[in-house]
Image 1 (tube, rainbow, N blue to C red):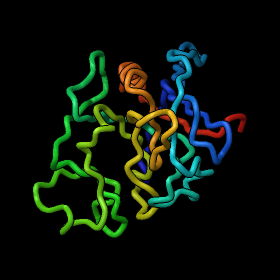
Image 2 (spheres, rainbow, N blue to C red; image 1 turned 45 degrees about the horizontal axis):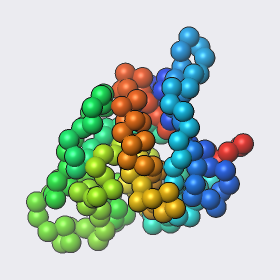
Image 3 (spheres, rainbow, N blue to C red; image 1 turned 90 degrees about the horizontal axis):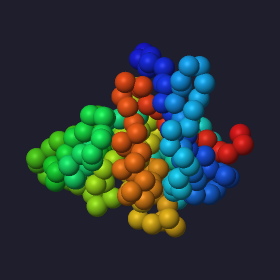
Image 4 (spheres, helix red, strand yellow; image 1 turned 180 degrees about the vertical axis):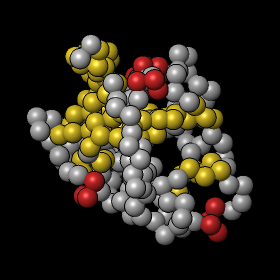
Length: 199
């Protein structure tokens, strides 16, 4: 049974103009006295190379789509020490930290610290000690429960550049990433909503 999440009063809103596009915008709004108020103005982001999945049912491992919908955020991690002002729990990653994207493994869509040979344990995995992850935030997609093959390792992280899509994550410039992470407050149960604009 899926665990009910507390209501989010801090929302990261990602809007993509049209489904095939990998460009979009991100803003943060917070619920104060019954009204949503913008607390971080819109910034440019890129999403998956195949655009936006219309729903969770349209998302599959390796399809290059970013899942639409609303998901809890956190914790954060990175190869660098936590940025100033961060409130989210934060974990430094090293060469033995992996995110497993092998749908046949019981570790699928999980962070695993493993000191052995990863190639003997999984058919597919992502090393979290990645140049694009100086800081990153976990998007809790396909977590409760984990459905094998429905997609894994969805993060908010640094982009390569504004014209390079991701494999399904939401990415932005380093400076904007640091600003966003400093804004997120676990006491407000932050979540991300990823939608097609005007839908």
